[in-house]
Length: 298
Ligand code: PXG
Image 1 (cartoon, rainbow, N blue to C red):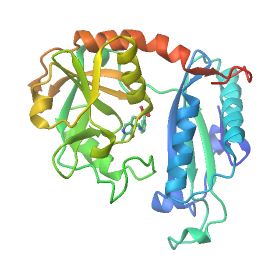
Image 2 (image 1 turned 120 degrees about the vertical axis):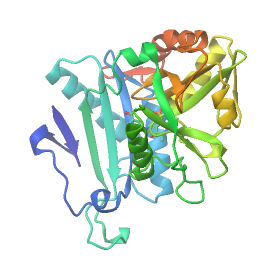
Image 3 (image 1 turned 90 degrees about the vertical axis):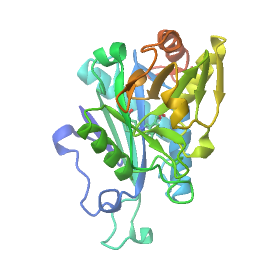
Image 4 (image 1 turned 45 degrees about the vertical axis):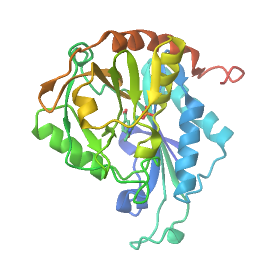
């Protein structure tokens, strides 16, 4: 395995960043998680666009332009797929503020650190895709856009981690986070969908969510499959009365939910969740960039 750090490739054991890096000291940075399926990168452009968007919002200048970074990602993926003899992988792309002093002023940081890790990921064992995840409604709220905008995929995940710890203590796999008004936002690393009377519903961005690449894909898939889909505010009673509930994320893909706060979801996995899950691989292969083919980059 070779890790990219600031223009060089390092073996796993030697891949280290400085303790003075503000990504480490302050969580000052942004990141993306991206999947590689059959040597093709899923929605690379969408992930890169979100990375540059997040970076822009926190005033972090990624030291590569878009096309340059895109070629670098593809090259690092190629090197690792060949070395490990993999077809599938998970890319973690991180841009931190870089090495500075012990104060938090980013002007003291020389230049951002860019790291690319290509590894395997399996967030949940296979059985959860058949029997569903148990979730709780967390007591930790999703910060609103005037605090730390959920649209920024930043290195600050402490709130989500606290919610995840709460889920762990409750023997659940995920935690649903409400916003300060009590509306459902998302889970700790996944967006949430419910199905009611054959309509697929997911919270709109303005309630305070990360606009997931998988979420957008599921909305597309519903349209392609003629399944009614809408972005609408969801509250706890809507969630508790749903026919089906599922989560979406790069790591988890599309995964059904079986219980919310100990109460069984009516159907798990439901027919609509299954239909969307079944279609997902076709959608993925259409929206992926081959790592070996510069010409057909989407
Ligand atoms: N909400 C939050 C808060 C997230 O962190 C998603 C939704 C789903 O977005 P995508 O674009 O992945 O559909 C995320 C994703 C992983 C992983 O391996 C994902 C995230 C963070 C850490 C790991 O899936 N964020």
